[in-house]
Image 1 (cartoon, one colour):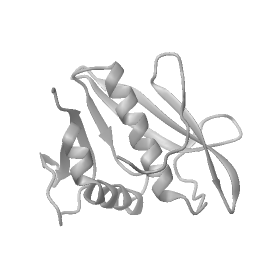
Image 2: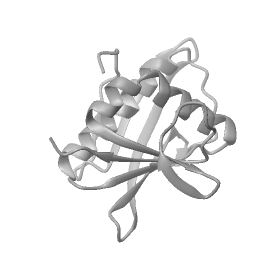
Image 3: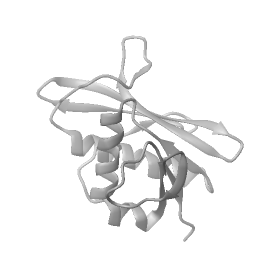
Image 4: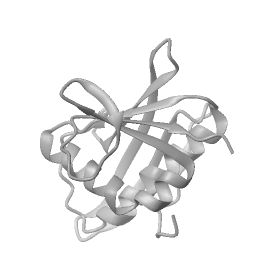
Length: 147
């Protein structure tokens, strides 16, 4: 994706990333973390503002006017993580239905770029299916394509 992104700083294992959102609300530290969730090599993608304890607050609403740049930065973290860890699944869902809907709109908006490198699935009625436009999914899975 050729969108402006924030500079990512990664942890040693490339499973955690941080960056600073810049906007009218000031500088807000953000985190992206990938955590192994099952033996099928699926990783949960967690994202949100860093709270005062250093943990991710995935319910925070920053409203810093840079949502496109933040989304592009989170996607850059996914690409970086997948470049180090081959043959894995990335699982993502929003902390609220509204956030899940925002993620779905982001997938749809950047579909051409995303599907060049990833297969994308959505969970609908507790079943996984290849992502389709116009359906409201409850969560998402992405798997890097082998080129």
